[in-house]
Length: 516
Image (cartoon, rainbow, N blue to C red; front, side):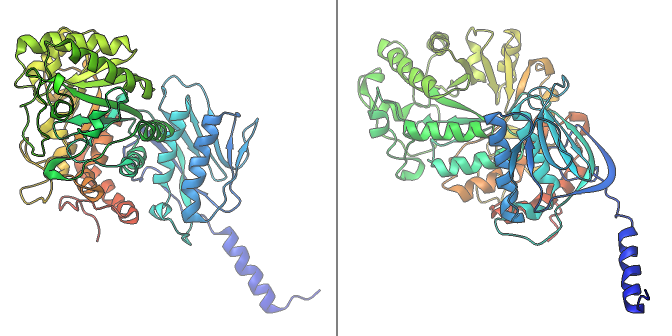
């Protein structure tokens, strides 16, 4: 049979195309935050397409839920219906989520093995699978974060990522007391935290300006104490059902909620709600300013401890996580001789409800159970007390980690009593080297608090949190020796596209080459 010249030419061209070598890739040139422990590259590409399926090895509800989470995250931008299937053996292609035993990975670590046809994500626990999924999201083109279908090539460089956290506690704190932020705002923040592999949200639920959690045995806390906020706004509170919804939403992302009820100071909202909690038996007026240190529970009254027992008891029932935070900071009008026995008695109450007590570093003035945890924010002397008592420390130094500090002198939101925290300042510190009294063996982890004196809505929150949150994620997860600002700022710049896609009101620091 004679073949015409045009057909022969098309055959030759198609043969040439099929033989054209695939453009080499380099997995090591990634923009993952926090930076993984190790990355090796093999130079090929794994491509997501409409035929890709997600396989789970065992019929585990938690693993299946995590697989469905991945499917949903990838569906909107790709348009692909990525079916989740249970399998008894490793598939030859697709995405494979599997639990394995690898002592180096711990409970949150993972290994991501990317081949041309098969992407395998291994971990010891479902939470490790979930952390690895965030890496998959970041390895795909930034357009994956869109909510509408994008017509692009969904390729990931091949190779192996092995990764696990430096610290077991990697958290943020959200103050919903000074200004109230609702359920949807908290969930929004939790989703953003999950992207950066955080595992703790500390909710500051009470302060002088407002009480934000329903306590059924003391109803006036929300009937009266929740009615306002800084500046005189209407305030608000979480019902117990709403709080449980937040807790579940967080747990689905392997984030633990730590509720804080601040005491004996920062308690004006409670004192305004119940006269009997005051030493003079008279209810205070509601407060809408920003001063601190002027309020205290009456530490001599037995009703105070009945109140605390009821509040802690109800919170403990609502909170599956192991911790209750009792505040303890800036209680300037509580005499030291009253403060110390108060903290020790409250500590006993917390443990009687099966929880571990956390408090700000002032609690180390008291004799603490060695299971208790101090949160360092200001005092090196208090940190020294913690170490001498053999208790673990959460590092939240105000001068480095407070998200409510202004970026610079013209920043429109935030305060500056602890200094200005530009993006590089927030990134360039090592928890181990901050205070000579606190060694690596003493540190449970880090937490970046957002106090809300100037935060009135979600956009305000986003401006103060982003892009600094990514840096705190890296401090908590990645080995300190791998950190380098000049390299990090380039990875951070690439995340600007995600922020734009998400519609975040983020601070476009001049120190970061965003690539406008």
